[in-house]
Image 1 (tube, one colour):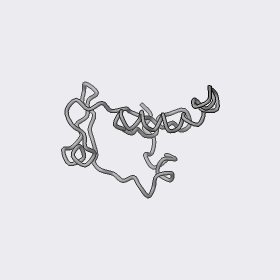
Image 2 (cartoon, one colour):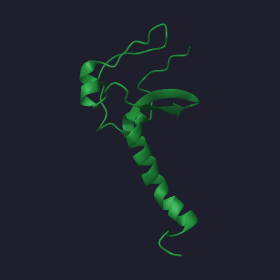
Image 3 (cartoon, helix red, strand yellow):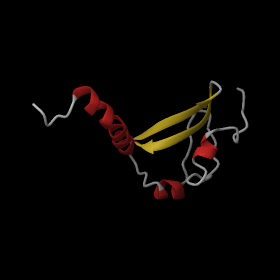
Length: 95
């Protein structure tokens, strides 16, 4: 596998004021990682929580991945699509 320099990612500039390294994780032979307790607590992650894994691409390769609570992802998608849907279907208050 081609390992790219982790600093060669557009995300670091885009989110430089809000992102930081929380931990260095190891992927085990089954492809699993352990998120440290302090990070889980800080991110309010608990057993059974659903998380969306988002990947960022650069030059055709994944340069970074992010985890987002699934309920927050739904809210973000609705917020982003709401103006588009209003434009497509018109104001639902008009009949």
